[in-house]
Image (cartoon, rainbow, N blue to C red; front, side, top):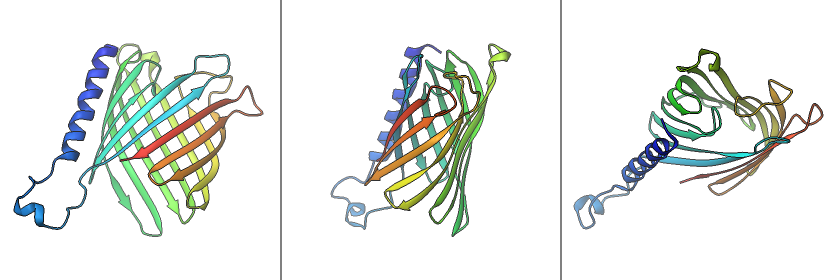
Length: 218
């Protein structure tokens, strides 16, 4: 699919989700007098900025929409540069004090890389400690040698509700360094519905890669 086609698909995805989120009872009807209903959709948008030493820096936007068990997601510059993907997943949650949230997914990938990809999102949390991981295996339908396993995992501790710090690892095809598995440290901050984070990969092994992220719940 061309870049124009991807942008059209992404725009349609956003419009459909926004329309479903905004839809409500007609003002003045009996339903309008009842207590407000539970919000049906939740949305989260984030942008990751990659500062690559001696390479091409880039941004990677991600948009998710969730309604109960349904999970929808759109990504760009994620599996590869100038590559988009759209995902469908199913949310599962287990536990009380020790909680596990898992979302198995399947996605279509198009652009510089093309194919299908089974993937997952998972989060294991206990008190102030959290392990978050996401991964996928891209089956490249044009070039078998382009098939690839991607993973991002981070282990963090939150001494305060607004701050977390920890370690992170990543395996990606979007950029290359001397290390096949990128490893580093992270610091994250939250304010109301916004999240900010700084990641520094490969410090002490090779020229460090810095990743800046911002996300908002709406």
